Image 1 (cartoon, helix red, strand yellow):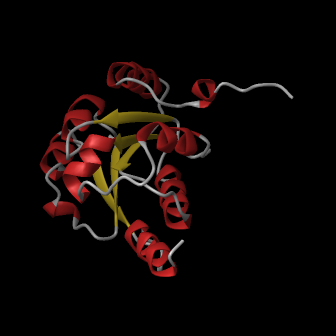
Image 2: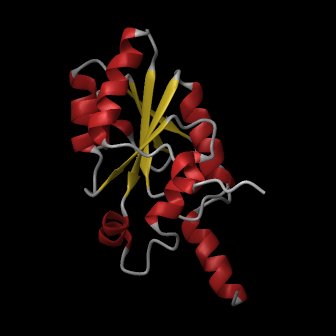
Image 3: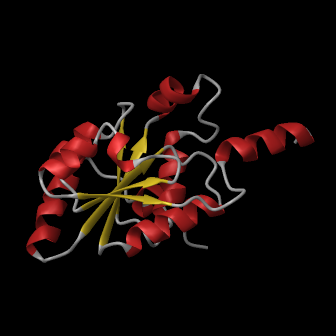
Length: 166
C-alpha cells in the first residue's frame, strides 16, 4: 500500500497565495464565491451548504476559523475537531478550491483582500445585518444567504452525542 502524505491532500493556503489565485481566476473570467465558518464535526448540512455555495459561481474559497478563533466565539470546549483535521476533511470536498485559516472572529480581513464576487452565509443570518455587508457591497459584490438543512447542526449533533453518552 502506498503512503499518502496528508499535507499533499490539503487545499490550505496562505491569504497571500489565495489573493494571487483570486487575481488569476478573475483574469480567467471565473466567478469567485467565498464563505466562512468553523465546520467543526462536518455533517450533511455542511456538505449541502458548501455544495450550494459553490453552485453560485466557479470557484469556492473557504475561510476556516482557527481553533483559537472558535474558542473565542463558542467557548473553550470547542472545537471538537482540531484545525489541521478540519482542514484535511474539508480538503476532500470537491466543492472547495482553497481554504484559508483565519484567527479573527469575523472574515472581514480576508474579504478586504479577496474581494469575492459572492459572499455566502447560512440561513441564521440577515444579509444587511452582517458586519461584512458594507464591505462586500462597496465593491459591487453580492451577499447570499442559503437555507439550513433541517435537523443538521453541529451543536445539535454534540448534544445528541452527549445525551447518548458516547
